[in-house]
Amino acid sequence: MALYSRITGTGSCLPPQRLSNADLVSKLAAQGVETSDDWIVERTGIRARHFADDGVFSSDLGLVACRAALQAAGLQASDIDLIIVATSTPDMVFPSTACILQHKLGANGGAAFDVQAVCSGFIYALAVADAMLKTGAARKALVVGAEIFSRILDFTDRTTCVLFGDGAGALVLESGSKPGILASDLHADGRHVGILCVPGHVAGGQVLGDPLLKMEGQAVFKLAVGVLEDAAHATLAKADKTASDIDWLIPHQANIRIIQSTARKLKLPMEKVIVTVDQHGNTSAASIPLALDHGIRSGRVKPGQTLMLEGVGGGLAWGAVLLDL
Ligand code: ACO
Image (cartoon, rainbow, N blue to C red; front, side, top):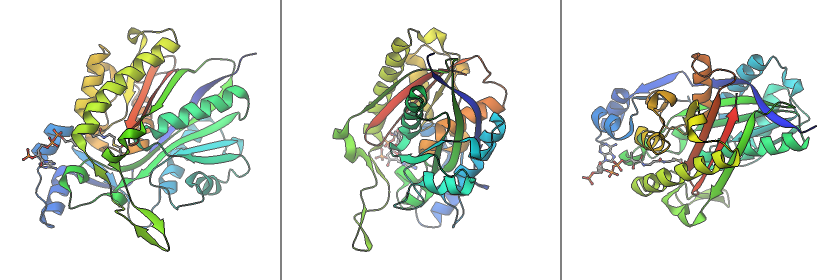
């Protein structure tokens, strides 16, 4: 009997500290950095983001999201035999945030590891989990995106610090005879490492190089629009589907203009797109599972519907997953 993987529960977590654009604009003005609500809304669609308090780590946000996903799936942490965390802001250099999260959940014993593919990390993690469940290497997985980007932002650089937020999203993926995930498509092009990176590294007890996020926004924007369209079409072709089969597009939430452009290229009306970038900002690997959970909990995204999830980010790395919920 062929094995498939299917989502059986989702959850998410936003840290309580919410900063509207007005809050961020005044915080930055106090440091001599000039920006405005108008600029942020017009260029990005972002109106607010959440920042984690000091002492809170990606695993803490992931823990809340995982508990909600487990509850939705009707499972206990002890049922889980695989945890994959997509993050670029891990708790420690090592061990993995997945191992730390596994311990906090009390789900010890199964496989646990991190995936680092920046904003496409959740798509990578979901595709890897799907492959493992289909081969029988695991049966019940937690796939998590958890980020605290506020810790790697340069708050003197207005071109990046207004864009990002913190959060986590998680889903339970279970193997079975009924198809859930239909196809996936992953890519990277390392020639573009320099346009979106945190170049610093740890050596000799110090961070050498710049430990804060650098981005050439326009270069990322132009590449993102093209690769997202390509990944969506490649994934649809693998599943022998067309864009008209998509009930919901749930894209990485970086910029409303990238989201609108992707929807236009797929000839999907914005009514079929889940948008959370206005309230969350760009939460990197957490953005897609956060948007998925919000879509489900708001009652818009329903069982039986066909979803296209896709993301792009540093690397450049990108990918898409098509699934039946
Ligand atoms: N407030 C006010 N003015 C600003 C701000 C700000 N926060 N930031 C930039 N500006 C100014 C610039 O200095 C520039 O001024 P100038 O014309 O006098 O030189 C002007 O606004 C226009 O700047 P652009 O960079 O051309 O603005 P653009 O329309 O390209 O928007 C943005 C910038 C929002 C970053 C956009 O390029 C973008 O979204 N890029 C893609 C980001 C992305 O998708 N990342 C993906 C994944 S993220 C990850 O993997 C971690």
